[in-house]
Image 1 (tube, rainbow, N blue to C red):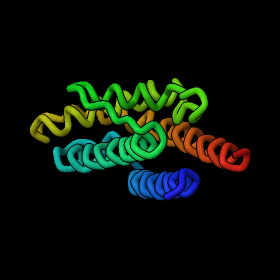
Image 2 (cartoon, helix red, strand yellow):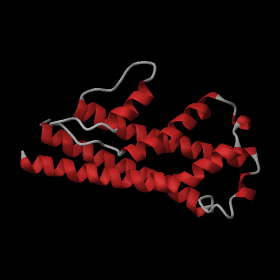
Image 3 (cartoon, rainbow, N blue to C red):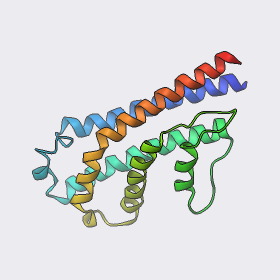
Image 4 (cartoon, rainbow, N blue to C red):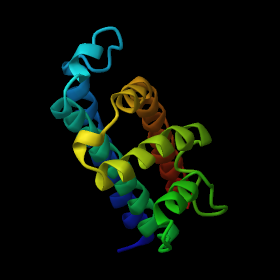
Length: 167
């Protein structure tokens, strides 16, 4: 596969992950969980906390899938240390001169790091230990995080398409 075709496939796969993220957003929005005025009573039981936690887990997994797609297909590098999740987040916020612009902005990196941290907790504790205040905080920042991420990914796709046209 030529480098141009590899980039085209990469960009198409990024678009699919954005669609997955939109589905997760829609699930929370349709249940009124993104409206801070009406969510308090909906987050009173372990089952709902686990359900929302699972959606946030899926969200960051989708984000990290995008990171791995870019890392593997453009950077030719996915970190492998014990801190690889954080290193990959850092890598995606760093432009690679002559190769690619930053995949995400520093603001997105900051917001996404909260979801990265939550996913680690979600994977490593019993669901009945989830803290409703943390879920509420993530629900508060989720719309802004998704909007920022979408803008970053769309900009990245446009930038990469421009680079391909110039080659």
